[in-house]
Length: 93
Image (cartoon, rainbow, N blue to C red):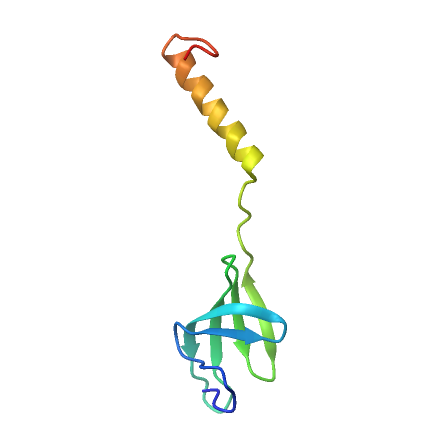
């Protein structure tokens, strides 16, 4: 366990590793004879593993959220499909 720091490296705490801020500790794996391995999750959903003296490794990249324009296009396409099934045609509301 990391003890020589002002940060609290316990599950649920938010820490900073280098210039990467806002990482939440989600798991700790003790390693016999080696530094513990910490599983961290970023604000954007990316998952990292951190081992002191070995560095920070990206395990799972963040999933890209669709932009507002893409969300609106999808909503319009769904609405048009619903209207066609109901026999109203486009713009029939």
